[in-house]
Image (cartoon, rainbow, N blue to C red):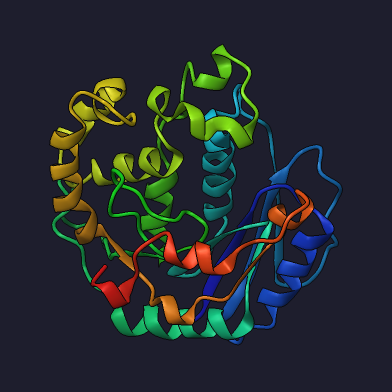
Amino acid sequence: MKVDVVIQGPYTDFAEHVCESYLKLPFVNKVIISCWKDDKNPKEKRRVKIVKNDYPDSPGTDNKNLQIVSSLNGLKQCESQYAVKVRSDQKFSYTSMCKMYEFFMSNKEKTTSYQYDSSKPYNKIFVAGVYPYLLFAFRDHILWGNTDDLIEFFDIPLEKNSLVDIIKVPKNRLGNYCQYFTRTETYLGAHYCANFNEEINRILLFQKDHLYDEAVYWYYTKDISDQILPSVLKSFPKSIIELEWTRWRDGGFEFNFEEYLNSSSWHEEGY
């Protein structure tokens, strides 16, 4: 069974390296590079589709709107039943991708009933780790799933009146302001989980009271998150993850892979 791979984010020399690496995988049908209109032009090659996106009016806090736009437009170009969404600044090793493919294909599982249309072919979306101590949260670096599911995942409203539209905060200092915005992983996860529980839509209407760190109804929301998230997302085993992340190296320090693995929960722990 072939899959399509969507590489979203700025197109760089490393993104080209990522593309070449994933084209070598025997189960990949094609690679879609979903980048930005002012990026340099990717090399034209067989089995590669280029999507040049317009920027949204606002990047959203932690660039969440950029991720939503580039992921959705890339996924809409997929032809295979299953797809993988990755980032242009990260590369999972050949062996890791092969093991994730085997695990995904062997463990595909239907979700609980889709609230609005039970005929949809919903399967669990597989991720590289979840955050059990946050709300609706998971590592958004790689997602494997039914292509229709992944399109649904990113076909959500963009963040309006975000923190970065109001004040200037460097990306590396956003962690000091988590009581003033919805984390990207929480924003994505909550919107998708709302397909399965309408109460989450009501929570999304009042994010400050429910989804921000230290929100007054945080524990109420956590109970709902704990009930819904395991039924729609599934983590890969930690033991099969091998990742290179260039953003850290370009920032002047090494990516701590062990810290990456230990800061979230995995299949081995029941997630």
